[in-house]
Amino acid sequence: MDNELIEIVLANKSNLEEIMVIVKQAQDFIKSQGFEQWTNGYPSREQFEKDIDKSSCYIMKNDGIIVGFMTLLFEEEKAYDALEGEWITNLPYGVIHRSAIAESFRGHHALRFFFEFAQSQAIERNIESLRIDTHEKNIPMRKSIESFGFVYCGTVSYGPNQQRVAYEKKIKFS
Image (tube, rainbow, N blue to C red; front, top):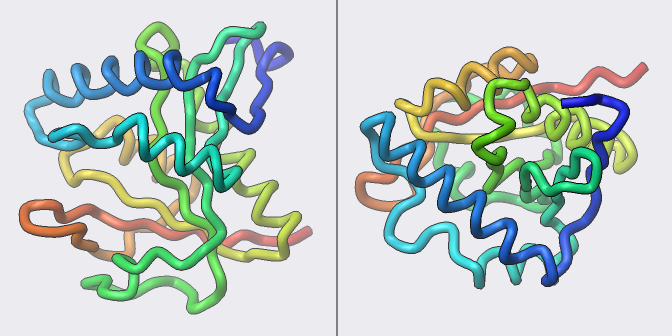
């Protein structure tokens, strides 16, 4: 993956087919790891359409080829109100959701580009905190999250059997 060729832009509906291919790759990978996340039709094409309509779905391109996606929201996540644990801050925050990297680009630290991008978007909005959650057994994602400086804060629930480990990163303004 060539850093010089990386571009992160807002997704549009013409990108949905490629996004859904990466979703399927991620679902297969998760299943191969022996835990359940992104099942029962989630995330759906309709969810990404909503994210695109809200200008919150981004794609990462490497030399013009879509290699990943991420939803970045600057609004309250209701599930985070019931955190079992403690957030680092009570500040307004950005939320990273629905992110994945294409199978052929896994292991190249591509998520770091999304995290850096999310951080820069937060700084532009004077938002001093980013939050993210994932499945407890999603070790590759947890390692990526932790390597970027996110701190484990506790667990959140999106419904029965949908507990997620939650992280926050306080952004330092320079």
